Image (cartoon, rainbow, N blue to C red):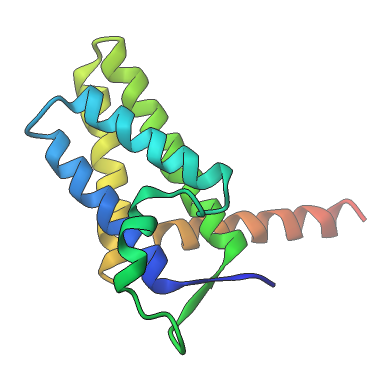
Length: 139
């Protein structure tokens, strides 16, 4: 199983938190759209072209550090892209309250992950449990 060093994960989460907070004060549509591009590029390339990881990489020490399964990191990044897509779409349609609601959900998830609780990991675990129960029932 491929693993992603946690410092890379944390740098991405930090970037998400900083950009989302900045979007509350300046041009939410454009900042969230920029964040969407960064996250989609990272998702599409397995993290190789995630701007936050690229910027932080020279200063990060990953040897002997905690890791996260690449599959889980990809799942969490997909959730981030979904929330960003919904936020950007909402702001584009003039649904400001919905746009901020999706941005706050993303901020809460990334902020909680930085503090040690991974919401996406919990969702992933429940999803895998659902699939396992479904497989057992249908076999």
